[in-house]
Amino acid sequence: MRKIIHVDMDCFYVAIEQRDDPHLSNLPVAVGGSSERRGVIATANYEARKYGVHSAMPSGYALQLCPGLIIVKPKMQKYKDESKVIRRIFHDYTDLVEPLSLDEAYLDTTQSTQCYGSATWIAQAICKDILSKTGLTASAGVSTSKFLAKICSDWNKPNGIKVIGPGDEIDFIDKLPVKKLHGVGKVMTSKLESMDVFTCKELRKLELAKLVKQFGKQGKYLYDLCRGVDERKVSSDSVRKSISVENTFSNDIDSWQQCESALFELVSDLSRRIEAADSEQKIHKVYVKVKLANFTQHTAESISTGLDLKLLVALLKKLREQYPSPLRLLGVGVRFPEPRKMVYAKQMDIPF
Ligand code: DCP
Ligand code: MG
Image (cartoon, rainbow, N blue to C red; front, side, top):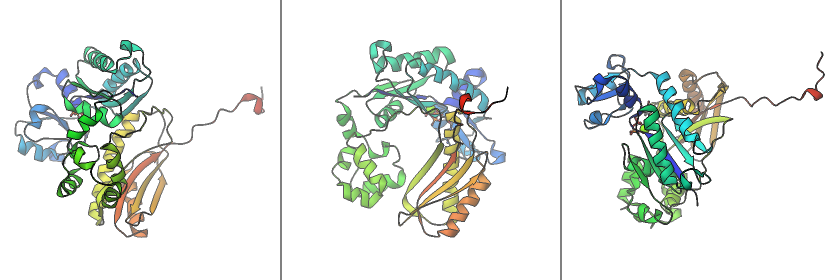
């Protein structure tokens, strides 16, 4: 039995801006690019969310929805510094910390002895430490797997904790709407609903073969999650060989416009993942990966020291020209150089 905690800061960028500028309190605030420069919203506080403003929305549209919205320019270095403080707090409770972005991480506290080994108390202590060291609130989910811990951290947001202990998983999953499962977007939700599947309990009635036929690899993932099966470990690898993100489409995509906008979305995800890894390692290569409707997989890569969007578009174009059939999956990633092996002095002929 594992004890997994998922911690996620509340309205992270905006909360920092509001903490640092009292003029912003009680107002609808977002952090993002300016509407004149076709910027997008990075995040918005709850006052602004009431108007429908959300992450990744064009700032111009956000202002139409919420005319009083104050849009503050992002100050990434400040957010990174806060993120470091939060990570240090996580490491006070366990070495097994897997950051997902600047403001969220999984923690495996199965072996932790702090707070008498209670994951619930550890989660409470972490939120308390975060508040006292940063003045910001966090929410946490505590359960026996990553996917349940993540759903839980969202359950009582903001500034809330939810726990699903061992033995209570299936009761909770039974009532869970399928759209709450990570990776189940609008298209998949409506497909499942057309099959009369609204909750995970109903999802469990579908046979594996049927789910795989409908959704490919995602089908197996759904089959497992609605049974509470999620063996993914909390991985705190400090030396990584690569970081990548990918998306399996509910319906294969084919037009260049669809492919390009899917790539843009993935690149923005990937850049947050890289930032979250906060690694000292320098990017060495970038690559684009496609899986075609016939399940064959192809990759195009190039040497690059950064996440160069133009280059990634060119790599995607190359793959589309070579393999002009519909895409099941698109992925994008960066590779880091192999860490240099230690060379022992005795094996070398070193002059004085
Ligand atoms: N972010 C971004 N672009 C996105 C989504 C998020 O730049 N498309 C940034 C801004 C967020 C931060 O990442 O503050 C964390 O993302 P979350 O999804 O955790 O959102 P918030 O912390 O802002 O709000 P919540 O209280 O819902 O967690
Ligand atoms: Mg957050």
